[in-house]
Image (cartoon, rainbow over all chains, first blue to last red; front, side):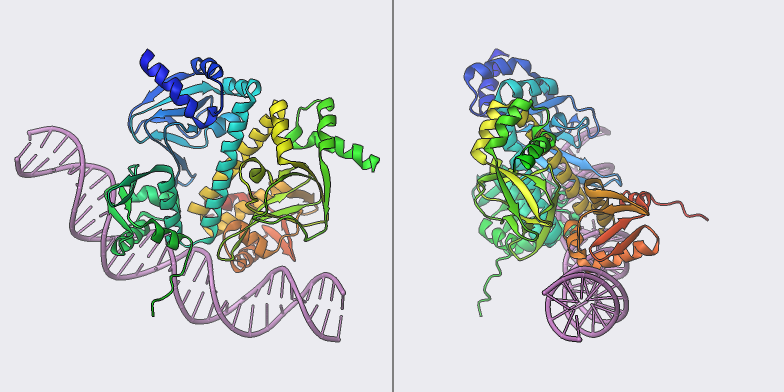
Length: 239
Length: 239
DNA sequence: CGAACACTTGAACCTAATCAATGAGTGTGG
DNA sequence: CCACACTCATTGATTAGGTTCAAGTGTTCG
């Protein structure tokens, strides 16, 4: 495994958490991690588990979902390689506030929370990177809050798709493909609506040529048009 | 002003940002701050302003509000003495994502963002405190997100009131008073609904003896009953 | 005392949830 | 390789929860 070993060391350098760290520091930090592999649909951790590990995804894709007391679910975040997860609990709380399920066979590096906290004291860079990341998270969450509180369903769905494009968009022939297998239910959970409304909305958009949809697949053909919906740019009626 | 000078130095020790700092460090950090006073209804900063200052409230109360492109508003956070604000922008972004308006005559200490970032490098404790604070913020925001996405209005309002109780509750004769002048409109903005629905809901609750309401005033008489609504504990019908 | 502001209440309307039934795509095992 | 089961998705009908609009009632303050 020495091959993937050095490859991951290189990948770590690009992880948000370890930006601008010296090679020497990285070489010290890397051995403190353990590798954890998980198959498609299996869980890294469940909501409510004691939060003792801090994760950085190396390969695969992970869904972070939160469950309400009354059985409702929300899809909170999609994790791509290089991103950290399980951090909120590790840095503050005792238990994970969400579940992490692999959308593909996935591999992550893990550190004990104690280890991470120590690292932050000895390497201010790591702490600052974390702060930067958290500040961004807070801002994005506030944005979503505002949307959920004030916007109509259609605009919320548009915002969700645009966010997905930014996070996991992959250029394709006729547009930008969302490179993540998402059911209508998943999109509904991210937009705070039902799968029925998502289905209707996406079909309406397909009629207008904005998107092209399939089973667990969304291709954005006209991003500009979606932005217009998201930002409520009332198109001037061509009288 | 030497009197209030030392008083504030003492107050700083209790600010979340400076927990567990030595008196010596605090004595070094304090002189780097400038004092900023603002009258009731005036603004510390407006949404979109260049974010060069980092605030810690010393006296008074501050409302943080965010404006949508279509003129809608949301009341995001109520700041009490000892809390920091304006930090997200200072730590990540270039512009404040919200406006900070004084609900009472207020005084805050301010640091330049550069100064704060430097402090974090030299004093890991400050960075860790910030991380802790941000992690909590993220978690609370996720909670609110979940509520907005999945819960009915009545439960959302209940959650908002309970959160207010936790943040600014003051024991009174017949219950717990929310120690912040909030109009129905304000509560509506925090719950993602309209002032009409808030008015109706609060009146219904008053009928049931759960709360006692007045002009910009809410007194919670039966917190337990509110929790039951918030958590949807379907009371067993006394057949 | 009058004006501005916060709040209440009723009625009409509408968005989106809910319920129900059907259709399409995927995978598995005989 | 086809049939069956399963999951995902579409679509129509109905309904309810909440918004919106409109009118009117307190309260506070200059």
